[in-house]
Length: 447
Image (tube, rainbow, N blue to C red; front, top):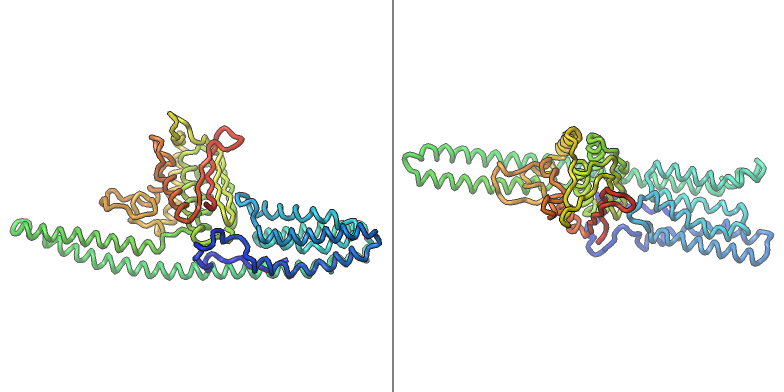
């Protein structure tokens, strides 16, 4: 058991460069979890006091020792399958912890029920609060069932007395952790709102001053065109320099708010997929993720779902999110092969394409402020000054294809890969998906 609290991305130290895998449990966490192993005293007492042979008792104690070792390892290696969901990893460790109990049951008998809180701990600190409550109820029911079925009613209280207090404390700890994370998230959103107000004032001041000067210089240049063309040209040159400087200032200011929120991207992705007639299978909650990795996941999720909507002709799309990996899988046509070059297989149904465009535009409008109105080609970086007619907004940038027709990576795939590499991640694209004739899978994981 452990009351280890997961760090909230809003307040976790971002200096993760020295730690190649910040999502693994640290040794203090493991040591703290190990303290709770003293509660194995109760099943151990049941083994020692059981009317069985010495060999059976020895096997029982050996089983408890293996159980303790595996329990510690479960906190040292929380996610043995990083590409799988948190629920899958929790279930895996529960099944692993059941194995040594086969040695304990012959000696301890029903006293083995007292290990139930350890299974609850394995589940609740990996799942959402709702999942924690469900898992705790299931574990208690399974653990108590043999006792309730084989003992008289006046003895039914013993397993509950031995397990309920510990489980109750664990759930209280999990609830407090959840509440703390929600409060931190609210603080983060409040700070972001404050920054937005400040940025709004900065943009107003920048544009207000710059546009006033530009207006005056343009009017002056108009008057000088016939009387002093050289002076008029100089004034227009000043206007060009001023507009470029102002554009740089605006980009710098808006850039403070351009990081998308992963939870918001999940909501927008679900809406975009549904609008395009694609069944979404997305997580309802976001696990605790390192801030740099969280930002990269948000950008890549947006682009990957956009490509699914625009080009896959898929009927369903599944997103799996863990503290270390992001996986986006669709059952579409995948990547066609032509002259050994991969090219996208676009949606050919006009109605589907129209729905997709509408969904993308709707999602893009929700995040327009963070995309940056002056962002060129939506690549997440400031491009060259190509003039107002060449600047595209976030929605247009999002519609870039995965691969260009000449087989070279397009803005979508290149942008996703660059963002992954910048966060120390590796992006892998697989098509067709194993076991199918098509589909596409994008996996982002630690490099």
